[in-house]
Length: 243
Image (tube, rainbow, N blue to C red; front, side):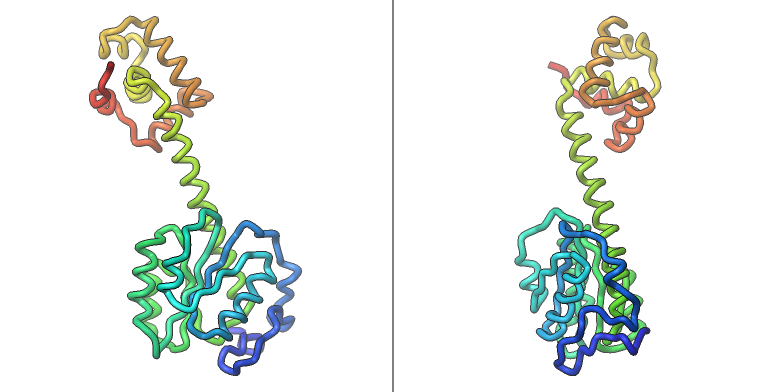
């Protein structure tokens, strides 16, 4: 813990968003204008302190006084992270965390607490928190943890966009093309695919060409990888109705 550079959470004074004793955070700043950091804490001074810290790093803060206010916030589809405060005098922090994690499974959660409880910390991490920090905490550590959370969020968003794109491409295939794709990626030759579907090898080649074009596959290996992500198998061909 970097005590000398810790945010003075309990004094009511607004701390400087950058503390030189904890490292030159400004020199580490990277442009993250599209990233958001949600802050849920009933203490207005803490919220303001964290808002300043978040803004100093180029991220957009969104502060809420309660979990209910946060849950009412419109969904965002940008890299983000949540700083969630546990208070010894407030509602059960673990229950709040689980409720939020259930509704926002892809949002990394950083828990901060005003009390030290090893059991609570362990349970919080098991429930998915990427870190459990005690107040007062080092600004440099908080920034590093937020950056880690945003990086995780970005990966999840990218994967989600990739899957939506793949599903859209697959949906553009005709029923017959989906059958051909399912059999081709299972390893069957064109002649074997034709035998399975009762069509000529030439027709299979034509459908296969359309599949490669619509799926934007650069090779058979590329198409197989797409099929793996979409969980397409040879049995899929039997489930596709052909009109």
